Image (cartoon, rainbow, N blue to C red; front, top):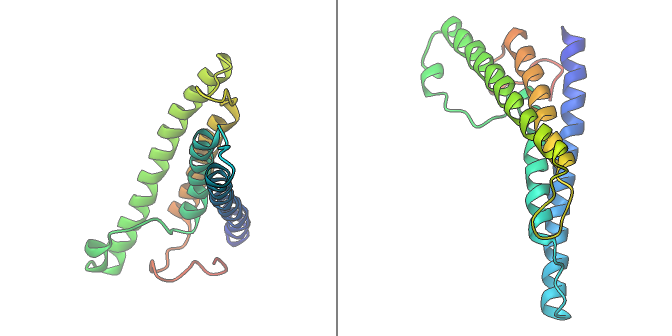
Length: 167
Protein backbone atom coordinates (compact mmCIF):
# COMPACT_ATOMS: atom_id res chain seq x y z
CA UNK A 1 0.00 0.00 0.00
CA UNK A 2 2.84 2.38 0.85
CA UNK A 3 4.39 1.98 -2.64
CA UNK A 4 1.03 2.61 -4.26
CA UNK A 5 0.52 5.76 -2.18
CA UNK A 6 4.01 7.01 -2.99
CA UNK A 7 3.43 6.42 -6.71
CA UNK A 8 0.14 8.26 -6.52
CA UNK A 9 1.88 11.08 -4.68
CA UNK A 10 4.45 11.35 -7.47
CA UNK A 11 1.61 11.73 -9.96
CA UNK A 12 0.10 14.37 -7.66
CA UNK A 13 3.42 16.21 -7.72
CA UNK A 14 3.43 16.25 -11.52
CA UNK A 15 -0.19 17.41 -11.63
CA UNK A 16 0.58 20.16 -9.11
CA UNK A 17 3.44 21.33 -11.34
CA UNK A 18 1.15 21.28 -14.38
CA UNK A 19 -1.45 23.29 -12.48
CA UNK A 20 1.19 25.82 -11.39
CA UNK A 21 2.50 26.08 -14.96
CA UNK A 22 -1.02 26.75 -16.22
CA UNK A 23 -1.48 29.47 -13.58
CA UNK A 24 1.80 31.01 -14.70
CA UNK A 25 0.67 30.88 -18.33
CA UNK A 26 -2.54 32.70 -17.37
CA UNK A 27 -0.58 35.46 -15.64
CA UNK A 28 1.87 35.84 -18.54
CA UNK A 29 -0.91 35.86 -21.13
CA UNK A 30 -2.89 38.51 -19.27
CA UNK A 31 0.24 40.61 -18.75
CA UNK A 32 1.25 40.42 -22.41
CA UNK A 33 -2.30 41.13 -23.58
CA UNK A 34 -2.51 44.15 -21.28
CA UNK A 35 0.84 45.51 -22.45
CA UNK A 36 -0.13 45.04 -26.08
CA UNK A 37 -3.48 46.73 -25.53
CA UNK A 38 -2.13 49.80 -23.76
CA UNK A 39 1.33 50.20 -25.25
CA UNK A 40 0.81 49.40 -28.92
CA UNK A 41 -3.01 49.44 -29.14
CA UNK A 42 -3.10 45.90 -30.55
CA UNK A 43 -4.77 43.55 -28.05
CA UNK A 44 -4.60 39.78 -28.43
CA UNK A 45 -8.03 38.79 -29.69
CA UNK A 46 -8.24 35.36 -28.04
CA UNK A 47 -6.98 36.26 -24.55
CA UNK A 48 -10.29 35.96 -22.69
CA UNK A 49 -11.21 32.62 -24.24
CA UNK A 50 -7.77 31.11 -23.75
CA UNK A 51 -7.54 32.32 -20.15
CA UNK A 52 -10.90 30.70 -19.42
CA UNK A 53 -9.75 27.41 -20.92
CA UNK A 54 -6.40 27.58 -19.12
CA UNK A 55 -8.17 28.30 -15.83
CA UNK A 56 -10.44 25.27 -16.25
CA UNK A 57 -7.45 23.09 -17.09
CA UNK A 58 -5.55 24.49 -14.08
CA UNK A 59 -8.37 23.68 -11.67
CA UNK A 60 -8.91 20.20 -13.04
CA UNK A 61 -5.17 19.45 -13.13
CA UNK A 62 -5.01 20.32 -9.44
CA UNK A 63 -8.10 18.33 -8.43
CA UNK A 64 -6.47 14.87 -8.26
CA UNK A 65 -3.44 16.33 -6.47
CA UNK A 66 -5.43 17.97 -3.69
CA UNK A 67 -7.59 14.86 -3.39
CA UNK A 68 -4.55 12.61 -3.07
CA UNK A 69 -2.88 14.92 -0.58
CA UNK A 70 -6.07 15.48 1.38
CA UNK A 71 -5.60 19.21 0.88
CA UNK A 72 -9.17 20.28 0.07
CA UNK A 73 -10.68 23.06 2.12
CA UNK A 74 -12.14 21.27 5.13
CA UNK A 75 -14.52 22.06 7.94
CA UNK A 76 -13.40 19.77 10.75
CA UNK A 77 -15.22 21.17 13.75
CA UNK A 78 -17.35 18.02 14.12
CA UNK A 79 -14.60 15.49 13.43
CA UNK A 80 -12.14 17.29 15.71
CA UNK A 81 -14.54 16.90 18.62
CA UNK A 82 -15.26 13.20 18.06
CA UNK A 83 -13.40 10.24 19.50
CA UNK A 84 -10.59 9.16 17.15
CA UNK A 85 -12.36 5.98 15.88
CA UNK A 86 -15.47 8.01 14.97
CA UNK A 87 -13.34 10.71 13.33
CA UNK A 88 -11.62 8.03 11.24
CA UNK A 89 -14.97 6.67 10.07
CA UNK A 90 -16.05 10.20 9.14
CA UNK A 91 -12.76 10.69 7.27
CA UNK A 92 -13.26 7.50 5.26
CA UNK A 93 -16.88 8.41 4.60
CA UNK A 94 -15.81 11.83 3.32
CA UNK A 95 -13.33 10.21 0.92
CA UNK A 96 -15.98 7.75 -0.23
CA UNK A 97 -18.41 10.60 -0.96
CA UNK A 98 -15.60 12.35 -2.87
CA UNK A 99 -15.08 9.11 -4.84
CA UNK A 100 -18.78 8.94 -5.74
CA UNK A 101 -18.84 12.61 -6.74
CA UNK A 102 -15.71 12.26 -8.90
CA UNK A 103 -17.21 9.26 -10.69
CA UNK A 104 -20.53 11.02 -11.26
CA UNK A 105 -18.96 14.29 -12.40
CA UNK A 106 -16.47 12.39 -14.55
CA UNK A 107 -19.33 10.63 -16.30
CA UNK A 108 -21.07 13.96 -16.94
CA UNK A 109 -17.89 15.57 -18.24
CA UNK A 110 -17.18 12.55 -20.45
CA UNK A 111 -20.54 13.15 -22.13
CA UNK A 112 -19.60 16.83 -22.52
CA UNK A 113 -16.28 15.83 -24.08
CA UNK A 114 -18.04 13.38 -26.39
CA UNK A 115 -20.40 16.09 -27.65
CA UNK A 116 -17.60 18.63 -28.20
CA UNK A 117 -15.58 16.00 -30.04
CA UNK A 118 -18.43 14.81 -32.25
CA UNK A 119 -19.47 18.36 -33.15
CA UNK A 120 -15.87 19.54 -33.60
CA UNK A 121 -16.92 22.36 -31.26
CA UNK A 122 -14.91 25.55 -31.25
CA UNK A 123 -14.88 28.64 -29.08
CA UNK A 124 -17.17 31.46 -30.19
CA UNK A 125 -14.71 34.26 -30.86
CA UNK A 126 -11.37 32.84 -31.88
CA UNK A 127 -12.53 29.38 -32.97
CA UNK A 128 -10.21 27.46 -30.63
CA UNK A 129 -10.78 23.69 -30.73
CA UNK A 130 -12.53 22.71 -27.49
CA UNK A 131 -12.26 18.92 -27.27
CA UNK A 132 -8.71 18.81 -25.80
CA UNK A 133 -9.82 21.20 -23.08
CA UNK A 134 -12.96 19.22 -22.31
CA UNK A 135 -10.98 15.97 -22.19
CA UNK A 136 -9.06 17.33 -19.21
CA UNK A 137 -12.22 17.18 -17.08
CA UNK A 138 -13.12 13.46 -17.25
CA UNK A 139 -9.46 12.44 -17.04
CA UNK A 140 -9.04 14.61 -13.96
CA UNK A 141 -12.20 13.21 -12.39
CA UNK A 142 -10.98 9.65 -13.02
CA UNK A 143 -7.65 10.43 -11.35
CA UNK A 144 -9.44 12.16 -8.47
CA UNK A 145 -11.68 9.09 -8.07
CA UNK A 146 -8.60 6.86 -7.88
CA UNK A 147 -7.06 9.23 -5.33
CA UNK A 148 -10.26 9.24 -3.27
CA UNK A 149 -10.41 5.43 -3.41
CA UNK A 150 -6.80 5.25 -2.19
CA UNK A 151 -7.60 7.71 0.59
CA UNK A 152 -10.65 5.65 1.54
CA UNK A 153 -8.52 2.56 2.22
CA UNK A 154 -5.17 4.15 3.19
CA UNK A 155 -4.06 4.33 6.80
CA UNK A 156 -5.54 7.44 8.37
CA UNK A 157 -3.40 10.01 10.09
CA UNK A 158 -4.76 13.20 11.68
CA UNK A 159 -5.57 15.74 8.96
CA UNK A 160 -2.66 17.98 9.92
CA UNK A 161 -0.12 15.16 9.54
CA UNK A 162 0.72 13.72 6.12
CA UNK A 163 0.49 10.00 5.44
CA UNK A 164 3.95 8.54 6.08
CA UNK A 165 6.11 9.07 3.04
CA UNK A 166 3.75 11.59 1.49
CA UNK A 167 4.20 15.33 1.31
